[in-house]
Image 1 (cartoon, rainbow, N blue to C red):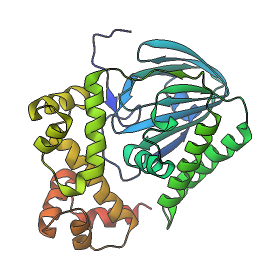
Image 2 (cartoon, rainbow, N blue to C red):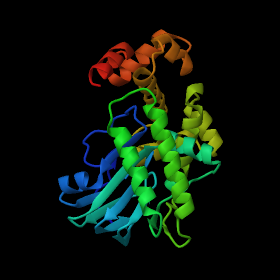
Image 3 (cartoon, rainbow, N blue to C red):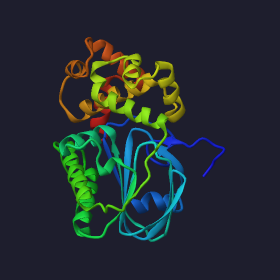
Length: 293
């Protein structure tokens, strides 16, 4: 499918602005977003996360990287990072949509001791057995996500995503549809994000990452601008900011302790860095986050 307009790169479909949020997982009912957009989701893609659509009832049509695919329940649709996709759903569609950030996906990969899990690879997985177990896993994830932020919430969600990954690995048909992004440019961006997730506390330069990828820094920067409308340096800063927000929201570490944990040698510089990107100090962010819980 060709388009004269650029494919929007968004965090979650329907949002006007991209924001770096501290949560590594977002869960919502499939009917909620579908109904809000009259059951037609226009072409878009996501940076920094993969999505799982669990269609437990109803049907629809998916367009994944230009290929039209009929969707019938029950099935799981996995949309990898930067994969262009759109949907047309039936009005009786039911299920869940999980958006899982790269750091959490990589944690699951390490725990499963795999280089790439079923969760991170674009495909359609027909559910032919053990559906009640899958219902329970998605329901538990959604319930835990919907609860107020409390001790152990992040760990609980991470464990449930790991359980989901195990279930999908065990129950995926060998004949599932797989439609990976073949673009070399996208491969570079995927690898760059992986490197950032592993080394962001080391505050490496863009030139260091580009050298590891075997490309020049200007070329890497152009790729980032092309795909996500951000510079290569902004992506590094976004990852550091994401982790800073998580520490501020989910731990009682002091501002100085968080700064040192994130590789800053000067807490004052960390505060200036945080305020420049969020327009508020780390202390103000923590107070506001607590007040909104």
